[in-house]
Image (cartoon, rainbow, N blue to C red):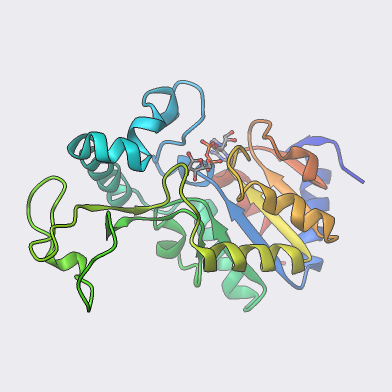
Length: 256
Ligand code: APR
């Protein structure tokens, strides 16, 4: 059964989606860049404003691109890091954290985002599928035992470890790289066991994260998708709400 696409502010559509979430004993919130858009952090695929409409992901979000032009990639991530530090969680991040606090143990956030806005809004134990833009890591495995730490890095751009000579890279998952095994396994377990999944602000263009909504739906969960535009995973939805996250989530998750 799939409800039709509804204007998120249509009372009947909101009521139906709200009921599905309230009846759920376990809810997974799967977020993408769209949930942080209203905090001023650009998405990737929105026409004109998305990062990939202005930059080539192969050059900037891949190991090959970093090895070919390390300073260009490092500086691009440094600029994005500053944008994340300046940003504040918006009403959507807060609505999820407040729901979590009102219903302890019911909701887990699984995010594709590399910002820390869910955590700063108060969400706990967030499953990060694509890493953390505010963290550094070594480009190659450190040959020393114990391995060096990012604190050993120097002032260059990108920094280079003074002990093992490694280049420092952002702690995010680049195209062509595997997701952190534990994060992916946790996300798949949560998706296969939840009663409801709330999918917010993702185009559904990047796998394996994009597969989580279908996994939840096939396991019998209600799937509520909140997005002002169509996504590649809309077919997994039982409730499709066309609207912006910061406007819809506070209404959707309002205290019962
Ligand atoms: N509220 C909700 N959704 C929004 C909003 C908003 N205010 N603004 C935009 N969106 C939606 C867009 O319609 C789009 O469907 O957010 C989605 C953003 O899609 P992408 O830019 O593709 O971001 P995402 O789905 O998170 O990308 C997945 O791709 O580039 C990689 O690693 C990167 O984690 C990222 C992954």
